[in-house]
Structure formats: C-alpha cells, structure tokens
Amino acid sequence: SSLRVVYAFAREMHPKTSDVFIQYGTAGFRTKANLLEHVVYRMGLLAVIRSRVKNGRTIGIMITASHNLEPDNGVKLVDPDGEMLEQSWEEIATRLANVSDNDLESTTEQVIREVKADMSLKASVFIGMDTRYTSPRLAAAASNGVIALKGTPKELGIVTTPMLHFCVRCRNDNKYGTPTEEGYYEKIVGAFKNIRQKLPVFGEYNTTLYVDGANGVGGKKLNIIRKSLDGELDLNLYNLGGNGGKLNLNCGADFVKVSQKPPVGVEHVPFQRVASLDGDGDRLIYYFLDDKENMHLLDGDRIATLYASYITELLNTCEARDLKLGLVQTAYANGASTKYITEELKVPVTCVKTGVKHLHHAALAYDIGVYFEANGHGTVLYSQNAKNTIRKITLEGEPEQRKAAELLLNIIDITNETVGDAISDLFLVETILCARGENVRQWLAAYTDLPCRQLKVTVQDRNAISTTDAERQCTAPEGLQLKIDELVGKYANGRAFVRPSGTEDIVRVYAESDTQQEADKLAVEVSQAVF
Ligand code: NG1
Ligand code: ZN
Image (cartoon, rainbow, N blue to C red):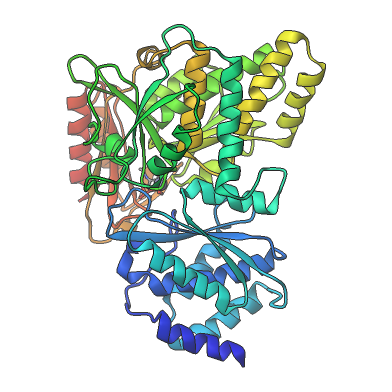
C-alpha cells in the first residue's frame, strides 16, 4: 500500500539513530538536537492523526528547547484551541517516538485504530521553529511526517512559541484573530497602541524600556514591532543574536531568575527597567539595578500580582463585582507574593503542580484566571461570561464604568490567552505601569520578596522522589519529608521542597527564609538530604 512506501521513506530519510528512551514531558520532547530528527518526523505523523481526530482542525508543532542552550532542541504539539496537547496523548507520543523503525508502521496503525482517526479526512498542521541552527532541519522532518500521512503542513518559519499557539487558535476560530505573524501584531500591538491613546503618560512612568532578547526569537520580533510603535514605548533592544551572542548563554529570563544576576550584554543604567525574555519568547522577567549595582528582580509572581490588582481595580470601577477573579501559582511562588495576594489584594489563590498545563487548567475555574509560574511564564484567561459582561458594560454602563470596561476590552486583546507570551505580557505590564504612573521602584514596593534559592541536584534516579500536595510534600523516599521538616524548622520563615524535574535529569531544590544567607544554607542542607 502507499503507507508502506511512506514508512520505507521514513526509515531512509529520518531513521531512528538512538536507543535512548525519550519521554514527552512538561514541555514535549527535549534533548540534544542530534537525537531528535526521527522523533520530530513521527510527531508530524501524530499531528496528522490528531488533526483528523479533531475533525480536520489545525494542530501545531513547535520546534524549540525554550531556555536551554543552543545544542538542545525540542518539539511539542499544540491542540486546536492553542492549548498544550491533551495529557492522555502524551503517552501515545512517547510510544510513537520510541518504537524501532521496523515497528513504526504497525504502531502507527495501532494508534490510528485506538484513537479512531478517520484517515479519509483532511488534516492541517502549522509548524513553527525558534532560531536554533538545528531547527530548520527538524521543521523539515516534521513537514515530511505530515506529508507522509497526506496532511497539509504549513511552515510559519521562525516564530515565538506563543505566536504559533496564537496562529493555531486563530486558524480554528477566526473570531480570535488572523492566523499569521502580521495578524498577531495587528491584534496584540494594535490593542496596546489603542490603549495608550486612552492612557497618557504621567507621573513616574517613563517610556524607555530595555529588553534582553536572550539572543533568541523574541528580541527579533520586538525589533520588528519597535518600528511600528510611535513613541508609545521606546525599546532599547539587547541580545538580539548578533555579535556572537549565544542563545540563552548568561542571558535570558531563566538565567536572570535562577542566578539572580543581570544578563551579559545589557547596558547597566541605575533604576532602568529591563525586561528579560527567554529563548522562544514565552517567559518574561523584569529587573533593575540600583545605584549600588544591587539587582532587584520582578518575576512572574510580581507580574501576576500587578495584573490581578489592576484588573480588580477596573472590575470594581465598572461594578462587575460578580465576576470572580483568581490567581494560580505553583510551589515556586515566593511566599511573600502569596501572602500579599490573599491578605492585601483579597484575591483567592490556587496552588498547582509545576507545568503550564496544570496552571492553565486551574485558571479556567475562575471567570478571570491569572496564572503565572515564578519563572515568568503566564497569562490571563477570560471566560465567555466575563467577556460578555464587560462588553455589555461598554454599551450600557455609566460613563466611568464604560471607560473602565473599554480599558478591560483592550487589555483582553493585548492578552494572548492561549499560553504565556513574553511579548504580550510585556505590553500588558507597560500598560499597567503607565496607567498607574509608576516607576519600577514603586512597582517593587507592593511587597518584599522572601530571599530564596533554587538548586539542582544530580541523583541516580530522580523518579525515586514522589510528591503530593502540589509538590510541596514528599511521599517517597521514606523519611525524606521528615528530614526536610526538621531542617526547615530551624529557620525563621523557612520553607523548602524538592521535586524531580520534568525537563532535565535532575532534582530541583527550593528554599526560602528570612535572609539570603539562610535561604542558601537551607537549600544546601536540603540538597544534602536528597543526595
Ligand atoms: P521542570 O524542569 O519540570 O522544573 C521547568 C520549569 C517549569 C516549566 C518547564 C517547561 C521551573 C522550576 N520549572 O520544568 O516551570 O516552565 O520547565 O519549560 O522553573
Ligand atoms: Zn520558553
């Protein structure tokens, strides 16, 4: 049959060259780029099957390893509404990625039967990639996989991960926007420009923003956007990939957050607001240096609280008080942020397991759900009920209420609801700071972070550690939690937890305490208990 020819083709063009088991984790498959070609080809096959199960709706494939260094790469699938691949399919993806070339044919056919895909339907797959030099070859392998099962691939070229999610969503729901890079700019940047006309610059806010592009795709896209901003925001862009700058190396959101150091390649100007993106443009962190060169970090928790407080303010002004707003965090959220949100903002908080899909899911339980990982990945989800209510107020409300509701509509349009998006988040943060006339010090003053430390520990088998209670407690190995409790008990405002990473072969340790020294010490002690 013609499928036979397809599988023979696969064996020759994209053969499986490694026997290392690979797993679809929290961010899809991620490993050394040279181990991925057959995996990506097979994800092309799977995307076609998925599209057919979804009645021919478009599925996305993103080639990226986010904040990892250049030699790595990765692949993940995006579902029709722009969300992460349904969890039950992760096992199928893992199975397909690991079978031998000889068994590929029978396994694919087994999968087709299992998920009851109607292979006579059309299938459509959007493929995006980041700036890694290994990405074009992998994107081509994905395309070949799609073509092999008679689907239609469309390569979007180099785009941020959130742009791919956005385009997939728009392709399946044309009310959300136009499924192209231009359509993305039109909606998100358009809404930002729109709102800026309603919110003149005042107070301590300053339109100059420095950006660390992590030498990745996000900075490049901001460089395109920059030219269309008519003074609403003056972007000074650094780490755009030129001058030998290496992707994510000593720069980017993950480096800044974890090392608590400023990135290389960015000019130091005291009290200048700097936004740091990660390599594929789905994470955002802010920081500034003071006049003593001390760094102050404004992380995902900080962005989440900024959003939650401003949106609450607007909801109060337009008297849409029955819309329930909530915030979703993980165990990595700074304890001070959680305290501030619940006690001062009086906003309910849900804590979930690490991984965007868990946060996204929990955020859907609110009319307006703000979710953020401390590392700067997050967004806001608005229910249809919230959108309808707000739209109604713009038509029927009192003048003040209408004004607030119109701002909210613009804010919804700036938001990429499909996934955390550094560019969209940057424009939202800038909107709120501008609306409040605040500088970066005033933003920081909302609450004081507890000093914290994150460490990586290499162990024999990271899966020997099991956790419960949104990863805040260990259930295995026996005795470890008792030991952690004992260590934490010695510290003022101490908190610590450990969990196996879903993206690296390590165990992560997190600790918080009253001083940086104590947090560091607690993290080391807990690491020793794990080892
Ligand atoms: P792991 O390696 O499972 O900790 C990391 C991040 C997640 C998420 C994923 C996907 C931390 C502590 N963990 O997961 O939040 O972003 O990568 O990229 O930041
Ligand atoms: Zn990323």
